[in-house]
Image (tube, rainbow, N blue to C red):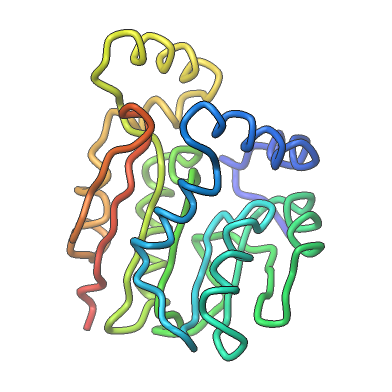
Length: 215
């Protein structure tokens, strides 16, 4: 599969240390499990639903969702990193599947999914690609579909902001562009009604949820 120009190969290189790295960073903010459970709660999951996890990484969130929707539900995780998906496959349950896929061209029919989520994925994309991805997610969500996004937010606390700005130098240009924009406006522009926005981790993280308006 040909990778888009914006794809960062370091995603493949860090796949084998990604899970312990996330656990370590999260430990300073209340723990990875607590944040993921908070995020999942925003998704309003129900048994038998079809769930799409865009930029699923090593599949940790997919596993938690799969346990909540039951054996008759379906969780699909897509990612551009072969190594991330190799790690994800080792966690796979019967109601889960993983797919090497460009999120601008999701290989599912219109309205297939009930819920979609993306965590720490949009900031890695140029803005035009972000909007294409959000529009594509809107396409594959059904009339009652809901999207939930977790990504960076620009903190207000002076010291936290200083440390955050240093981290943004590591993250790169697309991340700096992302935090200069309004995520709620982005998802409105892709065909969603924003229903909630919340801030976490001392202002470093935001969770935004929206309903599909292409009904």
